[in-house]
Image 1 (tube, helix red, strand yellow):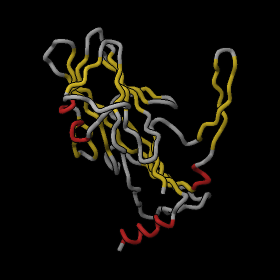
Image 2 (tube, rainbow, N blue to C red; image 1 turned 30 degrees about the horizontal axis):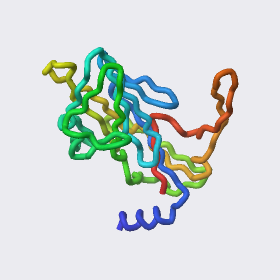
Image 3 (spheres, one colour; image 1 turned 90 degrees about the vertical axis):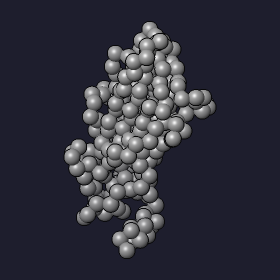
Image 4 (cartoon, rainbow, N blue to C red; image 1 turned 180 degrees about the vertical axis):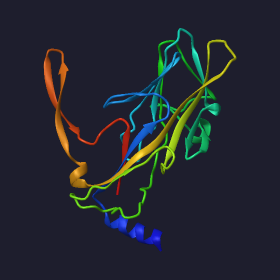
Length: 216
């Protein structure tokens, strides 16, 4: 009855958003546009902001050798459940990868399109799933009690070397907030310099590269 009641309630909620903030286990650099993981061989960039979350990423080869990614040894984890890239049919913007090895030349990068992070909203005790604009309840979590963990594990080798290495990017939800549409759709003006002129554009207040949302 709880799930039936929640389904009926969410059907009635047509102008609300659950916003997730994400923490990282490894060290990342972050700005409003992207989250960046970097080591001696590669640079990996994410922007999670999207309905249901976007785990897609750009993988840059920083070395002077060709880098080979082994798709059957590259994984996405969600609450410890593992799927490899071949199972998930991970692909780039234009076509599917051919075979199980993706090669990236020195200084180049490939874009990997991944499945949504989370498709269903979370229900928490004493938290209204359809809050008023004045009702904002922040739910904070640690790595120990988070409701959602996910990650990307990538196995690669360099040049003609047979030695394989794995790079791990682990994430966990550290905050969840339910917002009324009025709160979610708040914007502010920002400026960017193009050549010698400044252009003004609108930026959503809640938008961040380490956040995503689910509309319901």
